[in-house]
Length: 154
Image (cartoon, rainbow, N blue to C red; front, side, top):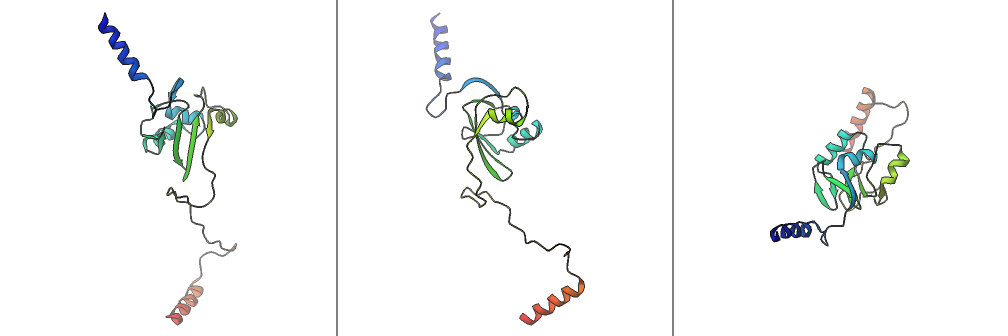
């Protein structure tokens, strides 16, 4: 009888959160399903691929398992569309509802998009020179004129 008590005591000791792990309360939900319900991605299969690619972290721990359980209080860090997204889970989703309902599932802690590459190494697209309307590729005559100018410079 005493051995059974010890087993229960060991199980409860392992289940208590440490200082490194935040206390997680309430029901959990699969990570890929939560990303879909919160309208972070368009489909659940895209959510699965995003997680499997290793671009999602749960409480600073890298994960590649779409079945990872997320609960209220967890912080998700991911790169999506060349932008860093930091989301705090507030509640599990019940369905993929309208955007207003989906935004109640999380708090967005992402840094504001400044338009420049942050020190984290994210690369933003390079601006492309604009052409006037109707100006497509140069004609053969224009290319020859450009070549003559380049030859003079050399």
